[in-house]
Length: 212
Image (cartoon, rainbow, N blue to C red; front, side):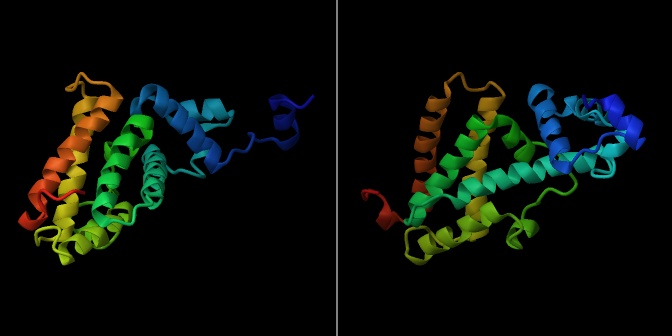
């Protein structure tokens, strides 16, 4: 029977591990204990390798955390890319819906994407203006379309997008920190009513009162 002992005996080295195995273990630790639960020693123990074996793939804990952030953002960006809504205003509402759903359905990945600190995170306005946030970049042409058609008041699309995103983010953070004593479905309803009020302030006067 093959065992860790026989592998070491015949190869004179630790069992190999992969980047994906390391990342999977890091996610499990993060899900249970947050960032404090992730240490290279714990990950090595769970993958039955020495800590040095991990450094071939991730040179530091910070590099590993950056990988978690990147993977979390990829999940968020996939959600946004899947929004099938031809109307630009309705698409923007769905964009916020997906953000709230992401936070409620997958809270640890949401935390990794939007709450963890990293020197490599995208920063407003330069990184967003350069299109380095794919999910954010998808909102810009919808806003531009609303402005061009007269549905929205004229304004910098980048700042309008930031206002819409910040609105959803603020509600989510308030909920996560216990400021709201509501169930998840109630938070979704609060967001929908709240974003409608925000859009009322962005829309041109001639659009107000029309059926959407």
